[in-house]
Image (cartoon, rainbow, N blue to C red; front, side, top):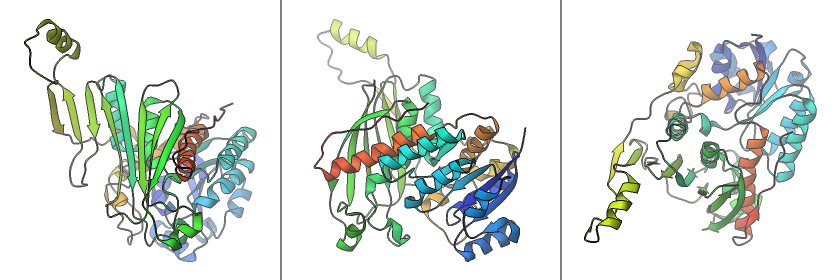
Length: 392
């Protein structure tokens, strides 16, 4: 299979992906760009990048006809403009979350992808984490039974982060939470209503004109009886970091652990529900109430075996700059071991000339439901219909 040349733009977080690309068997060369010369120097020293492979901006990468794809890892407001430029330059595009800052930006990216004939991948880590893979197996094997309800959250204190995050509306950046829930059922979000709660400091609220410390929402899905509860905070809440989801089924349910040092919990119905109903109806003296439910903490397996040998270690080993001790990286390979799986999907989708698992349409729905949820919260809980995004 033809090997690729990849450009990575933005090294503050993008540094994490460099050794994965460098070791991927379908990648032959990597070039990088960042406005901060210190980060370029780290990449040179840590990963052996030459001066000819390092740039202070994206323009030389877009102008290079030998570059096949560009992975954007820059501040949120730049995601849509840079994604569109990458696609218009005739290159495949992968972009970190969120996909854009407005519904109009999401549609513009989709339009650019259609016109370019290239692939776009929404680089949402949560659908490549070991916990999601585990739930996906349970669901596909029918062990959950009928999914009845899901809830998800992204808790993160962003005090001290770069200034462009200051006062960022909580649900404008929802996909670490809601992505796994929407991916599991494969249903489009149709409507959302949300409320804001609490207040952030005045100087934080001034940037994005969003006053809320917390936003929570209920999402209804197209052609489904299942609802999803979604919540997020960024400032002013005393709670440690977590990206988590919970899935409640008729036969089995999954709850994310409360503390990082714990393991998640599985709940199992031990009997046959239909037989329990028959028994109860046939015996008026029966006073047993409720089903028998077993509960256990489970060790979620790693899924490195799905990857090429050369990048398997990165499900457990983070390579982010040594000064970063954020919990998402300490959890093993960053974001639940997702990074090598995500990069592998991006690379193989391009080489195989197919849409990636998380393409621009899914990215638009997942990001769009958060944009609409924030709009709902700012309008006192008004029900908002999420726009439709066309694939063709």
